[in-house]
Image (cartoon, rainbow, N blue to C red; front, side, top):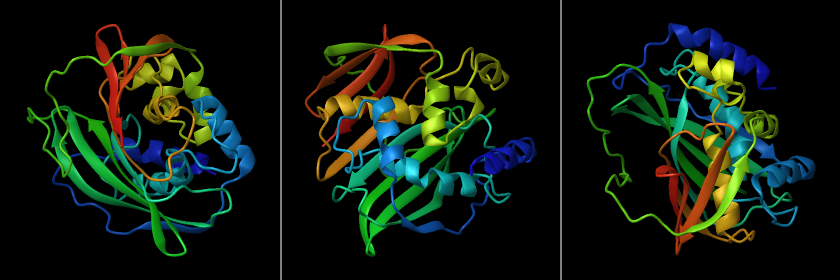
Length: 274
């Protein structure tokens, strides 16, 4: 159950003072014998637009399976960033082989580093899914705690993001996002951060309305980009550039390995799948 962790995170959040030179917890949160449930996978696939066979895990689904471990880590006293208002800013996924509901997964999450950001402090969390001791899926996610800072640029990590202006990718389709999307995805994924649930709770944390989950936008784009087929191996890089307010109309754009999610002239997400 994630509710106690959410409550703990909410209680501890006002007590934390994020800064990029704070110490990080050194332990790994682990869970063994994880077998994805077919019903849960089907519900996730429906809301994200995946049409993969019910026994095959979409590229983004191990992130959902490991989310309780990430929550357990981020709600400890030793984790320096407050849970409330934490914003997912990027994810990089490497899949070494396709995963299925028949696989027994060993999941592990740890905090790799803190870096200064022009809007606060970012933490990088690394997640690994193993099968029979062999890595099958890994990810590296960054999460931003917004606060006053003197930093003017982001410190580049091992895979620095491109900030240069590029030609917009050609539009492929439009999606109408309903106001309750955050609540619906939260029920499926377990991520019930208040910024996604209701305009009132989002405003308390600095957003004009509820915003879509970054991982929903990434999953929906990947579902479209892969033409509903999960590749056996893949490398995904996604940068979440601007919040998607709910409700809204967004444009999915793609060409070659690249894809984007836009509204008007604003790019919300850009990514590649190779």
